[in-house]
Image (cartoon, rainbow, N blue to C red; front, side, top):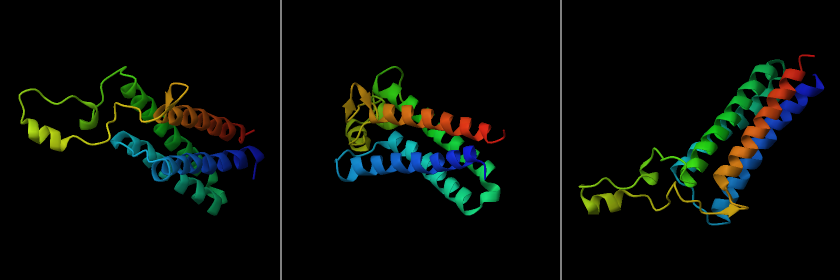
Length: 155
């Protein structure tokens, strides 16, 4: 197997697995419970791990599987950009956990329906970057690196 494809395949497994370990660690050890959009960011990483494992199990099918894993990682990064934008108030979110209650509704029903973990508030930041922001940076950067290695594997 081409060294560039081996690199892309390894990155396609290690990157989403590491990000999922970080997400689950921050939840189970750090007590940072995910909002709805946080869960949205995890699903493409689960898919990428499965696709990358399949690329290891089926080396002859590695090229398309690695590319699909890269696409899944990039999708998670795009969701991370959107979620970070909601947290920074650059735009309004599309979920109940990121919108103000509708005026004129039943206040008690609105209160009971509001999630405890809001999507528009970062629970943790480092250097002003939220977990959604870090997911966006690592997923987009890593996804691009995988695609570049994948393209180089044709040389």
